[in-house]
Length: 89
Image (cartoon, rainbow, N blue to C red; front, side):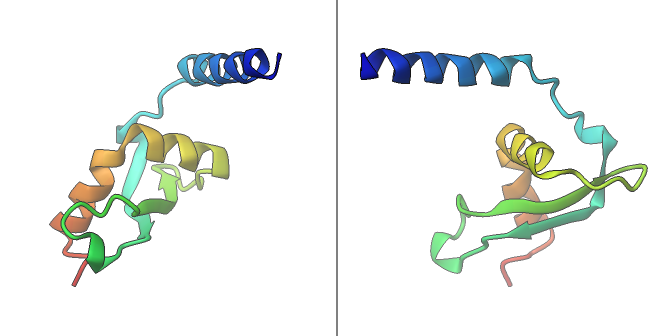
């Protein structure tokens, strides 16, 4: 029975993720993006790094749920920003 509930929970989370509207990267003010979790031991992948703060173009900050979604949808962006802005130095 427990396995069934775990499977159902997993399926609900997957469905919830599919139903969320993707955050358009063009609506984000790139200069407002703050990244945390940069560790030189993880160079060049920085897989533990994440966007800790960001705002939409209109200045509205992303809430925790939006940040989590934006991180999930844009993991490549985090690595790109770290390297392009040399945040590891």
